[in-house]
Image (cartoon, rainbow, N blue to C red):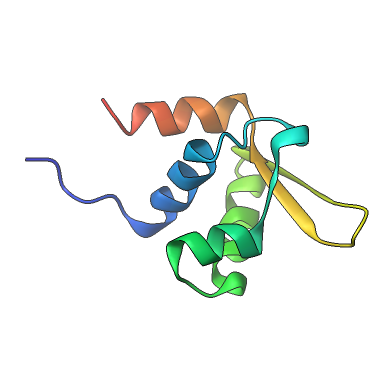
Length: 83
């Protein structure tokens, strides 16, 4: 039986499940936090770490909110979680 994913990997998986795989599909940290029922700061910290590791990208939208999406390396990382 498969063990449960560590929480940071669940955050990446959630971005993937939301199809946040390009800038025009990016999601706000607050959206991901709401889905995972966790603190927005915690989620954004995890996503910022994945950005620094080269798995995600982020930008500030026209409302001043930070949005995140998986880049090609992040998509591959999420897909590897299923093998």
